[in-house]
Image (tube, rainbow, N blue to C red; front, side, top):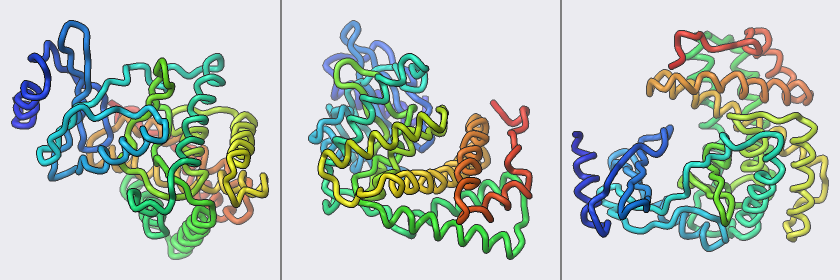
Length: 337
């Protein structure tokens, strides 16, 4: 038994009314956090988050969970905490992940609920609040640099020419500017099918929000509708986007006068996010030994190429990826585990 596991078990004896009957992993998080489901008192369950304080800080999770619950989102309630040790006891939002529940039959209802919750977050969260940091140009660029460093450089082993570096620099600047010109709202930052749980009542349960920021209005919409883990037809996605634009205007959000502009914001925001995601998936494989994320890279690359091919200002980026044969890249089978 590791020192962290021993610490966790000893802490649970202090905060639970009885010793837990069973403890089991609850998720495979992509960070240094670990989650465990705890059974006690016959069939009752709760979740323990273990966030080693030398690697993670639980305080943002606690503060943001409380703020989002105040806006009407179904986030876990913090039942007990030891912030110095990096331990939280949370209500259990169940095991029905959106990703495993989504299909052609269920998607209208599940996405309607998710978009309603997102609208509450965006219309209710105060962008002037000091609770959340800004999603500024520096952060946007750092995220996109993950694509250059971890995917192109370290995973593929490419040595880019000066002209290719210039093409990436120009695309990154364009995509950052696109994000920064949009109305500012609270951004969950990972609002997708692996972080949304099917719950009854108050669907959806919302997880993994501790990295929330104040940023572009279309960012979370991209996370949901151009999900890194499940894809929908372009025509359906664009219909959802424009319906959501109408919803935000009805809620009184300013700066949303042009539907075409909103769709462009959405498309280009997606390229930024999927460049970042491709880099993160590569890093998870190379640095953390989590090779399963490689199988999601063809989807994120497909999103990038699909959008870049429709916007003249991204034509050079699209050409670079195609000339380097990245459009047909697939992970070697032996790397997946």
